Image (cartoon, rainbow, N blue to C red; front, side, top):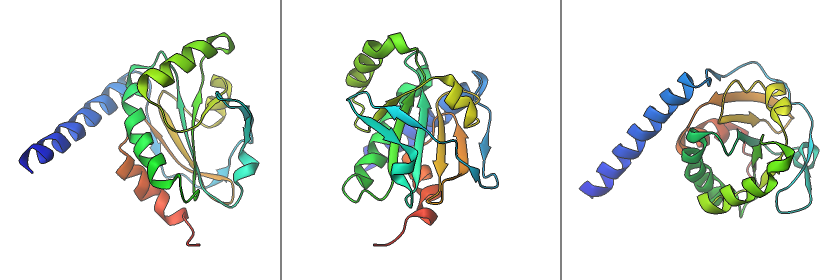
Length: 174
C-alpha cells in the first residue's frame, strides 16, 4: 500500500515536472474557453483507413497533437492509453493521437508508437491542423464536445484522471 502511494506520488511529481518542461518548450496554455467550432478533418489512420471528425458527431472527441521528436509526448502515452482503455468498449468518446510529423516520417511514427506501446488510434497530419486547433506546443490535448465545438485545450503532459474530469460533463448515458 505504501509503495503504491509512493509510486502514485512519484508519477504525479513526474507529470508536474514534465508539464513545467513542456511549458518551457513552448506549451503555454490551458483554456476553458468559450465553445468555438472545431476545424473539420478527414485524416489517414496509421493502421489504414481514414477518420473524419464528422464520424463522431454526437459524441465527444479528445485529440492529442504530438510528434516523435517531442520528449514530453512520451509521457502522455500511458495517460492516454489508460483513458482509451476506460472508454474503448463503450465507444462513448473518440480518442485519437494526431502525429504532426512530416509525411515522409510514417515509418518513424509507426516505430515510435510500437516502441512506446500506443493503444489508441493514431492519425497523420501536420502542424497546420495543430495550429488551427490552437496548439502552441506539444503535446496539446483538445476536447471537442458532442456538438463539434472545442471546449477545452491543455498544452503539456496531463494525467488521465484530469482529462476524465473535463470529459465527464460531455458523456451521455445510454
